Image (tube, rainbow, N blue to C red):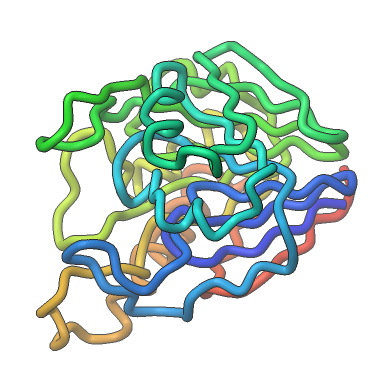
Length: 253
């Protein structure tokens, strides 16, 4: 049995075979010019056994959030990111495991394999740090693909079939640049990965400060649009659109 909770953006609690993972933790209400607009600051059910970091962008690799976790927490990061993480966290860096696409590690009862992602490798325009963006395939009683942040790429067809896809469907602004999936692209991604279940992430949580006049329904729209596209092109995939803080249990395959 697989249990998950989506806390908004790309932060997902995954529990499988007694092992607990947390993806791209963003555990605060504000990050630079972004403010949390849906949900509340995540209240985790406990300490994760490991954190999976997909890439270096500040809304996915947030050091302030990582400092809130126990020092012994394993941090799985893209190859080349370890030095940056250790510099930023110092003694709280825990056990930092660097993976390149195709590499794998064991966390508790789970096997975690780094898979490709089509996304910018840099930290940001103010930083020279670079590391290839990743997704992760988590295998225990079920198989879960955490796509991170990505555009479409041909190798998605080699990932499946998977029991669950955690797939990005939007962003934190009114437009999406290269290396992102919109709802239609995300539906194509779950079709390629032959996902039995899909949960949309990376949408409707954070928005730039000053955008207070936006209609609340716009924050849910990318998830609902994804569900509609998936019904059309990936009818074998069951889609569940969660609200931040909402959980889902997927039966053992």
